[in-house]
Image 1: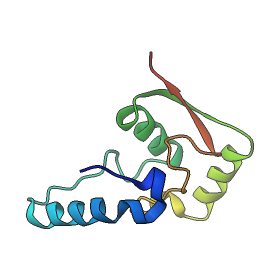
Image 2: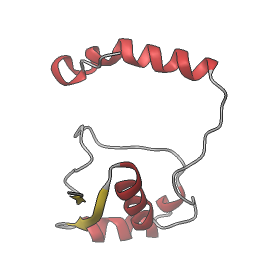
Image 3: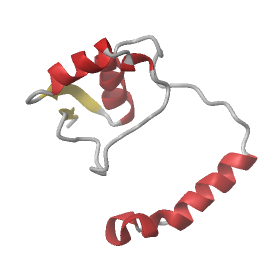
Amino acid sequence: MLSEVWGKGSKGGIELAKEVMRVADKEEKDFRFAYDEKKSITEKIHILATRVYGAEGVDYVGSAAKQVDELEALGFGQLHRGYHDNAGTAESACCRVHRRG
């Protein structure tokens, strides 16, 4: 199934979303996080960047490190949902991943 989100915005992802929901509803449910849920936000970002996106590492730029510390202090380190920005990329304004090769 082809995603047309890049060219058509959210409307371009409707058919893909429907197909993902159809498959998810019929497949055996064996969900598990890619990381230990008790790890810090920084550790979780590193694991996702290296294991999922194939990065060599993560650099925090600007005020990103301070913002992560603030989120941890507010208790957001133990959230169990995957929220992301709408940048559409593994890289965002908060951090830069080191790509392999």
